[in-house]
Length: 159
Image (cartoon, rainbow, N blue to C red; front, side):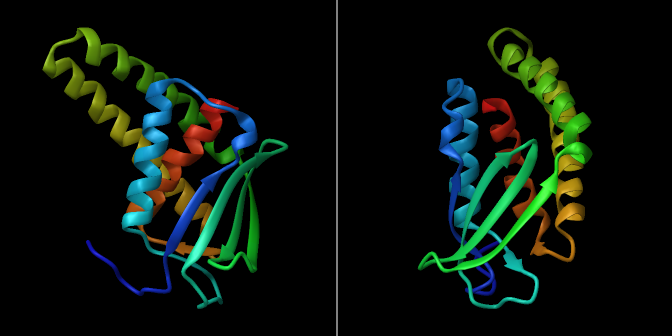
């Protein structure tokens, strides 16, 4: 897709590291999602045009916290989202991801493909939920929402 508005984007993303590390599979997902997110994203807090931005994602009291700053760490906005709308899709996504990682090691290509289709469908559902929850707060495109949803899942996996 390439770069869009040079200001309406994330230049850096960090996850709350106080939660600790997880399995190699989860850590790989996290690293890939952050890399992909920084490479290509569309991210702009509503009413602000002073990007590019830095994003720190964390979980606090079972809520998802988006702390947004400018590149010089000047605070822009913090949004706190309830995780309740994500519970079912994240739980289902974890279950299918476990099946997927097991299948990669022992199943036929057609079985792996079927599980992966289900995994992508749940991931898309969670991404749309995230876009809906951020509406009116932070403008993101669907690809950015997908990568952010992966990071939300990683926070859950570790927490």
